[in-house]
Image (cartoon, rainbow, N blue to C red; front, side, top):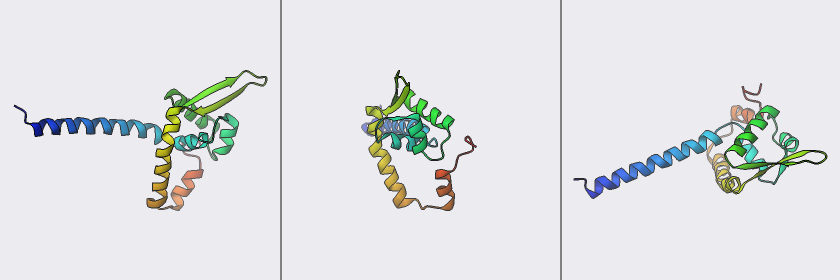
Length: 133
């Protein structure tokens, strides 16, 4: 017969497994290059593709398009089309996307305090990655 301690340990392991899975899902998305920068740029409010492309220095149009599509697909951003003329497209964070901003700010603050700036990571923050070359 299972003891209370055994049941508690089993429930703790299940909760830990769920948290690990949730964290893995979050970093599967947020760990992709440019995703955090695009989210941060959208924190200023709705923006068109060209404005985003200019604001996120070093990102290619195809990578920006991929990241925006992914953010829209997971419900962190929306894409709205104004039929114009001229036709214009704007991207905006959803409530779920805005809810992520404090966490991104905390991660940024943590990185400033605990991760040293090196020539390599400073170059990689502005240089196109292998998929963009």
